Image 1 (cartoon, rainbow, N blue to C red):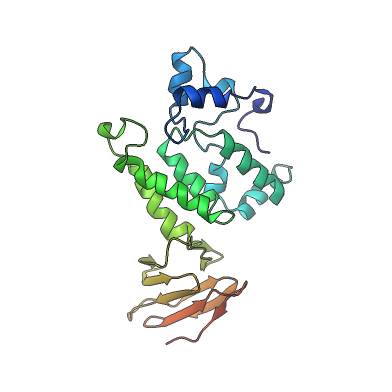
Image 2: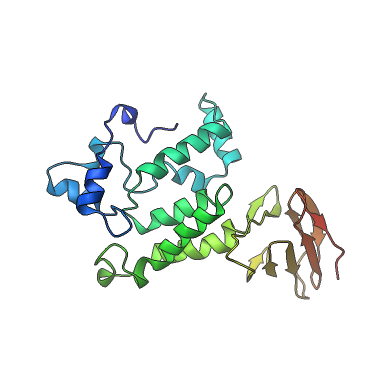
Length: 244
């Protein structure tokens, strides 16, 4: 796995059972374990514990392909299995002491485990409504978690990226969402997106903007102002219907 810092793998495991029994919330979570250990004269840095998704931020900031290229430039290999083991390892040892941690875990799980991704997103959405950290909301709302939750829907669940001078989309909606609809601006071209489990619709209003190139599920298309195009998502590579 990818270690959080040098020597991390040599640290002892925390007695999770004891701390959950003594300090855990109704769901067994230990969001403020850092404060608990500090009160005992101890520190999370002395155990294989992650207060938040520090290492997994790599997979939040970069796609698996981008991260693999970066790691290979450093002289290491990064297999798909190593990525899975890294995610599993820190999932079991993260206390989510930051509200942003749930956003990152939701993102990382979006492709491999959509149900778990949705659960983490709901926790992020509940950060201030439910004051899940037990008293921090009155000090100020968690704006980063709010923005991250919107970003999950707009970029992660649609697979929206800008690569190779194109707008890339690779949707993967959780079963709890029937449809996502929103607008973006790309190269001065307003675009309306509607995504369901089986279809992606792009609508470009008429105007003087230049045409844009898009890539949806491996298929490329050139779209022009005033055009609407559906991309069927039922196949592994997707299919493209004609423009209207």
